[in-house]
Image (cartoon, rainbow, N blue to C red; front, side, top):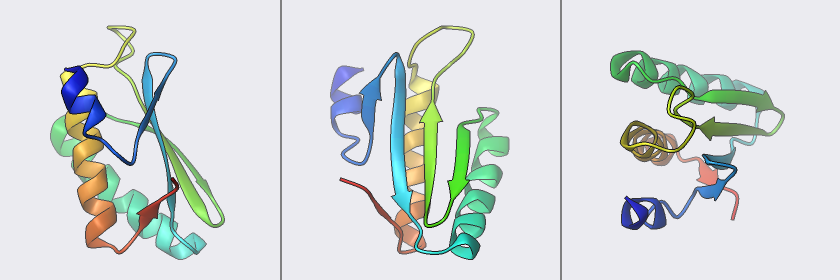
Length: 93
């Protein structure tokens, strides 16, 4: 699992969770990004914590009932990164 986490270059691991900040540039782009995330989260049955601010979106992924990062979190992080790329949104380094 650690190799998969290490491959998530847009994400940082802290406190048994994955965190990323995506630089949307505007509030409207942030809402569109979150809508894409919401669709993916519903399909996966796994929901991130999302914080929309101007001009970025902060996302945290953890599996609450496991108290740590699981394969579900890694898969969702990969999907969110794909959504960001498709929308031309970069992550903060």
